[in-house]
Length: 120
Image (cartoon, rainbow, N blue to C red; front, side, top):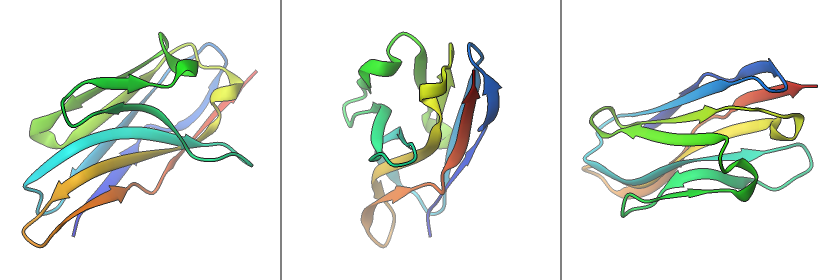
């Protein structure tokens, strides 16, 4: 059984910073890619920042220059440093892991989500 456990969400004032963490645990042999998505009320889930299977990074245009994704492969952990936050960043942030290989199968996983609220 694989679990993605997120932490670091919370409330912050506009202009502030938060750092999200997502640790994947279980009988993991390898993970192709990990990233962060978010879903605001009434909106579809969208990618925020993600590593591809080749190790490159993709960012949503709205967060470029403000957010930075990083990872610790040895710990199967991915981070999202969020700076210069604004109220439009308010959403539930979800961690995603793709191509998670275990002795039983290969599949994708989602974390439970962590709320980020930015007040003006």
